[in-house]
Amino acid sequence: MTDAQARQWAMFAHLSALAGGFISAGFLPFVGPLIIWLVKKDENPFVADQAREALNFNITATIGFWVSYMLMFVFIGFLTFAVIGIAWLILTIMAAMAANNGQQYRYPLSLRLVN
Image (tube, rainbow, N blue to C red):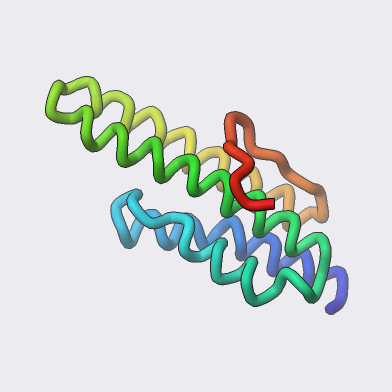
């Protein structure tokens, strides 16, 4: 895999979360990064690292979305869902841009569940 291809796949790992998140209304954004990590993790260390980072962040965001959804019954969930959604969108775009430039991106407040 060339360097350009590695950067492209790393960017796809981050952007696939956007596609999954929008299709599932924020409940399954981790599916795209999971697929890319499982398929490409042995081909390039940069792709494996960024796909794992995207997977961990999107699992964390999914937990946040689910908790916010449950809190909607007491009305605070509407606010937390919006805050998490905006932060998720901005951070995912920043990560995709960094990966496309060949930089390793680390999401803030992300649980490290997959190593």
